Image (cartoon, rainbow, N blue to C red):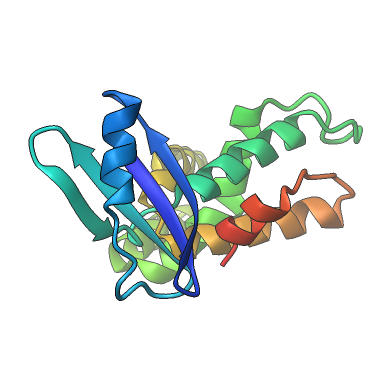
Length: 184
């Protein structure tokens, strides 16, 4: 079982739960969450198991459920665009293109090993091995995972996607609560 609670200025405003056991067990465990020492605008997660009860931790090392939900909603919006030059592209194409344009650059900035990989591809390209470097670049983009993004990195990534779509006249749905929680 997995629970996520979003705290804003010391108040828990949203709790989402993925259940693998009974609803009453989840409700009992969540009601036991303490807001003592809660930081404003931090997403807290708790992994709940029958054996161990409640094990709380701050999960800022991975994108949030809200960010993931907004991301996939936007990929669907991008797939459904009727702007001619972009119409007909599947959400998988959009996911690849957004990673290529934005997420790779964020990871390159934040990870030395990722930056070294990208630099190696650039070096191969500069040596005249254009096809090989393009194949390597495509492989790196394919292997680049949004799941490894921190909450901060994923928020930045979502901002880039939103700006990209806005500049091209694409409409993205924005649920005010979801947007407010996903974009920090």
